[in-house]
Image 1 (tube, rainbow, N blue to C red):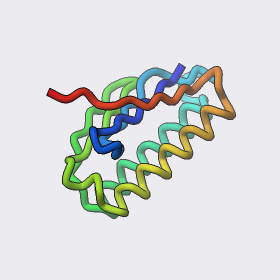
Image 2: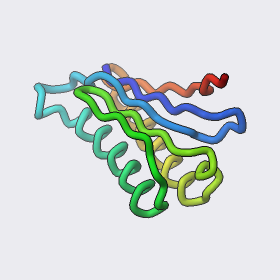
Image 3: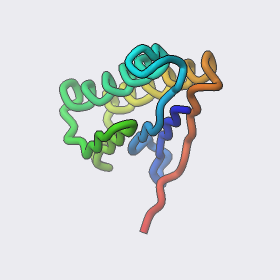
Length: 111
């Protein structure tokens, strides 16, 4: 199962997302569900970097993608639009493939 978590800060603004696991809807390299989620999240990452010009903290390892942006960028309209679109798209994918993708929403821990 692929689990995508969208974290919100104390002001309820999305502050990061983490994707972990594999959808398991097909063989490795042929899993269209995993490819779709990956494309959505990588497009969001690219949009944040290249369109919104946000410096990201990113961790990319086998089966994991973590993307976080600074608090000062979270109120930016472009950042909000990019992240909201990614969240909508991944949520729609999870509805279509509930055995393979789960979306979670969490409040980030502070202090």
